[in-house]
Image (cartoon, rainbow, N blue to C red):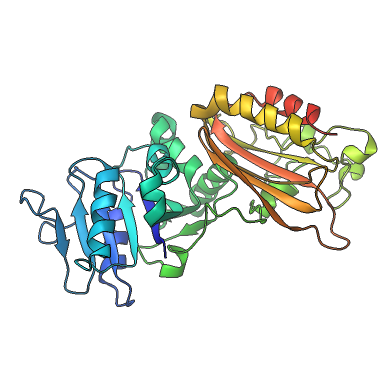
Length: 370
């Protein structure tokens, strides 16, 4: 059995420690090893984590284990796995807490690039905590904060009670455009149930492409303004031909359409974040060789700027869905289940990254269609 690992990241002061303490001390009957990579003021109480002793692993009375990283993550993970195998430590899962400014990318890649780690651990998901009170400032000022949002499989928003409903709404819109894959949950003082934290399977190659449905529904006329807000943006002039549900896909002789938002109305999009996402959809089949060449080239060139990407594809030559996903330069794919009887065979891909050249990507994807 592989040991599931969760990466917990988030803005400084967003309440990662509060969340961790809750996870550690709650009577959930799970034995969890926490790896602390936090050398700031806010590491878990010194009683729990004594960083100036030589002992780097501390067993707590409820069976949880804490350790601070001395060397690199890889060494620490190997040490924990070895101790578990020898029966010296008993734990069921690992949570890695990164520093407030860390890029979760390299941490995630460790689980895929390192064979020894991959033999013992399975990366489950990346959780990002966003501090509602300081989010706008942090997202404007710090690319690291924006990257953490782009990487997330699940976003928890803390301190939401300290901002107005309108501010919270604007923040949620902003986060959704950076990362439509990650569900957002408002969490008061770390008060989240464990099933929202563990076994989220964010890295599983499954045939569900979970994208916020509002984000997809906005494909044609991006109605982000609430009733009463007025927007003169041309994309908001109602065109009955573009009603939801009547997809005017490539079958009608036009290219796969792509979601974009350039409306500066209201408070939503006056900040043009460099971490952005877009969705590509097409009803035409992909040519496997062309697509592989194109994605390979893109990942080679833009890998460092590609945070997370995933697709469920309609591929020529197979009756099964083809699933692919990646982190930075690492991309994996697999055959999924068969397309169901009567199911519309439509390829959907989502890309989340920093200043990705959308036009190049779309053109290349369209040229990879049969």
